[in-house]
Length: 333
Image (cartoon, rainbow, N blue to C red; front, side, top):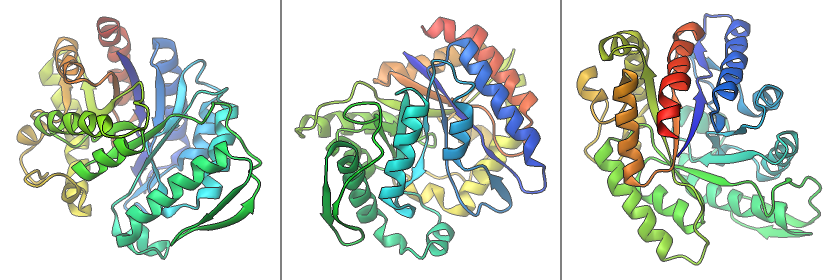
């Protein structure tokens, strides 16, 4: 099993960013020293009342701390971006990371982001598909011509190539069943939702494997899932330390409409104990090892943990990270 860390890079807007940035550097060094396999960074825009550090420049800085770990985007909001820029930025980062970069992408869901970029949210799937096709062409072909509904290129010569051949691994984030099938059709790694309950993930991994069997694309070597995770000495302490921040984050998700992206029937507007059940990994090292192994038994071989949410200090996040590294990872290897 591989274990990665999704860094929490969203903070309350009224807090100075530099100390929090220093915390991300320290967490990256800790993850490196404990033997985590990767560190990922997500993306949002206009997140008031939160602020967020953008992933691509941040990953360039984190590369200096990462050692042999992989770095990557978890995720880029591909429909909001231009594929030429993304292709060249990621190719550059793959070189900086010495060929250890993960290209994680997703649709995005927040209406405010699409409005700010002048993009109709209803076009996000089409823009996503066109962008991904163009990016792969720019990474693998000598000259590229492409004419789609949203993007057009005429006989361009790509100049930034990734070190990895044919290209970095592509992870596609999936909240709902169509996104799971989209990942399989393109031969991408499924990056399953942190928000889904266990029964939904069980259903989705079956959908993914079935869809892979129906495509000619080679099956990727990994199947990944991200889990909101907090480890403390006891179950009670873990819930006490993470609850204010994780509960607050999911209340914000509910207001933003994130749960509308999930399969029908799931929602976030419920008491925290009910919300956490079969959705988060929270507890003592023994509890967290047991919970993570459940996902391994489903068929996930790459578990990404996130243990910092808006408002949580780096010190509290690193308390969980330290226990993950010292008491959980060795038992999962």
